[in-house]
Amino acid sequence: MTMSTQTTQTVLVTGASSGIGQGIAIAFGQQGANVIINYHSDEEEARETLKQVEQGGGKGIVCKADVGKEEDVTRMFQEAIDAFGTVDVLVSNAGIQKDNAFAEMTLEEWNKVMTTNLTGYFLCAREAIKIFDKKPTPSPEDKAKGNIIFMSSVHDIIPWAGHVNYASSKGGILMLMKSLALEVAPKKIRVNGISPGAIATDINADVWQDEEKKKELMKLIPYKRIGVPEDIAKVAVWLASPESDYITGTTIYVDGGMTLYPGFVDNG
Ligand code: NAD
Image (cartoon, rainbow, N blue to C red; front, side, top):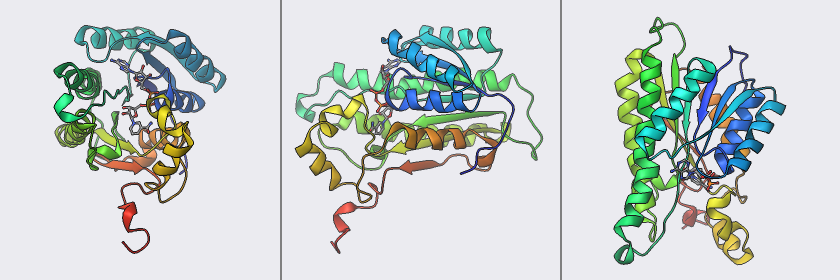
């Protein structure tokens, strides 16, 4: 993938104090972007992200906000406007897991995951669309005036026992992404998803830091390696660039083949 030289983008990344979000913020920094680095609780790591964004040649601010709270989200976008005048790209990435057997799952565990992973994506996307709507609509020959990228998961199509709340939220993101993409395409706003497979971050550290569990996980990855945040970050940068301008309403699976029915690798 080639990255085109383009005018400075202003990019808001949620959950950017760790893992995939941190990797994405840094990758946009390397493109010279202005990056709004959202974090929930770890200010120190958010500042580390900012340091690396600046080292890469970008500019940025850190912004504490809970993406599941409407007032936090509207304030965050206002802070973005105050700092950089607009937003060109939203990467809605903040997400959590609260796993439990279905019969044991509490309403709190269900609601917490839905509020962060699905309602949070709705709230952030809505504020982004309002900002994009203020820009004049380009002619059909011109490039998009705004881009939204939803960080989903292979579990938007792979069912996941013991994680029904998480898989339901990611399945919801798939239809949120497609329906919104359809609604705003005539305004030249693009909306896409990235669905990672297994990427080594905090969210699944219990798996990739344990040799036995890692061996089991490898059976699900035909390409035989766990991903790293940079694998996702490169796709996000490209998906937000004019290079991918004709893509909207699509999910890119970045999963080392996890969605290829790995059980059939040796003839089934
Ligand atoms: P992570 O735990 O490192 O990152 C999640 C981030 O979201 C954290 O920085 C956390 O503070 C933030 N966050 C949580 N609740 C929040 C809230 N209410 N408001 C704002 N921020 C909040 O894990 P990650 O792997 O980097 O996850 C990033 C995204 O990628 C998630 O949506 C996750 O579902 C998705 N994903 C990850 C994997 C993987 O294998 N790591 C696979 C598929 C999808």
